[in-house]
Length: 210
Image (tube, rainbow, N blue to C red):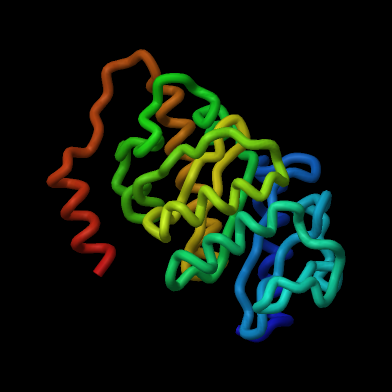
């Protein structure tokens, strides 16, 4: 896919997320890798009203070369590209249920989104919750780098989810799956429910992550 088509797909998918309530106001940011750098939504932009020519572009050295000023959380995205092999896109949302989950006390920091359905295992994997830092704080990128590429998704405490993937479409799908699983977990809170066992998780990984 050439850059023009990638820009158009970014606008289309961002609008879809906004219209379905995965992002409100000017919250959230999305990036996608291109041959000579990274395209990323501009700072303080609304995912529902992006313009292809105003999407920010940074080069491989992190210099802003075109479009509007990039998201203040660009370092969060760059950390995934630089540490997780094969990353082609990063989606950071403030979606309701995943953000609510990020605020809860007592969740497993290492596995913040339990294996409730096969799809969260297949599309997202284990999710680490990272400590709270203010939006725009470069320590976000440092915390991602410290994971060494071992996680495709994190929850930023009291902030929201971030998902990395091989391309933009599959990354959006993964972010949606994480949100849906968070919703199910909160709906089931206080009720007896089943999680997938380790053998079932291992089978999914073996079959779908070869």
